[in-house]
Amino acid sequence: MEVTVQVSDPEVARLCEARQILNRVGDKWSIAVIYALDGATLRFTELRREVHGISQRMLTATLRTLERDGLVRRTVHPVVPPRVDYELTDLGNTLRGTVCTLMTWAVNHADDIAKARAEYDARPAS
Amino acid sequence: MEVTVQVSDPEVARLCEARQILNRVGDKWSIAVIYALDGATLRFTELRREVHGISQRMLTATLRTLERDGLVRRTVHPVVPPRVDYELTDLGNTLRGTVCTLMTWAVNHADDIAKARAEYDARPAS
Image (cartoon, rainbow over the protein chains, first blue to last red):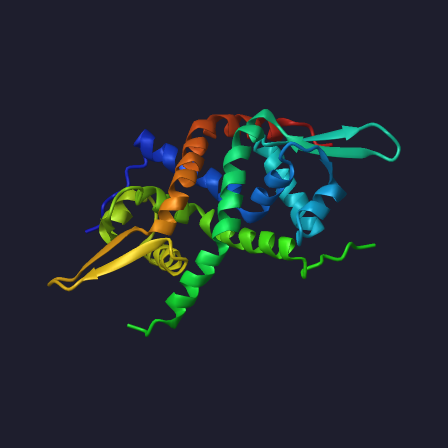
């Protein structure tokens, strides 16, 4: 018999909401953009150079999502040619430390993960 | 003119690899499973109860990925009926703190994000 999920439970609803947020924030491009904006104000082209491998379209979409979530501030300067800057908001800054820790963890443990995967794949099928 | 990404640069290659890892680890279900296994050894059905809203199929896939990455240990006990336990490995434990911080951040800032989004959506189209 299935256990019914009580979506009316506020604690559960809150965790589900948090998971939705994490799904977006935990996206590799979001993390890379937040990481690149750590203490920096960058223009679109600068960001694209920092976030290796991101397409123009994906960077536009990622920045829009982060702006909508209140994590990134987009400032259009009324100059000719127009200049657009991106930086972390106060809310974005509260996430920065954790994102950097996560990024550092991934860099430091990439070899461990590659090793674990090779071992897993070498196991006889059971 | 496009800037060519120098994939031969070991620093860039390492960051790209880290991003691939984060993309999996940052997945909402992975985070929820790691969060549920924080200090606990759980059976499949227990995990499914802890991770509200996850389907049996998705939990199986998430556990397999986490096991392959060396973050979760799956132990089959030779009893009748068979018992299968899941727990974090030492490597999984190094990620636990950051994942819990991220989850707590998401829970604590869900309202800020909802507010930011409502404001963004209410803006006149420019």
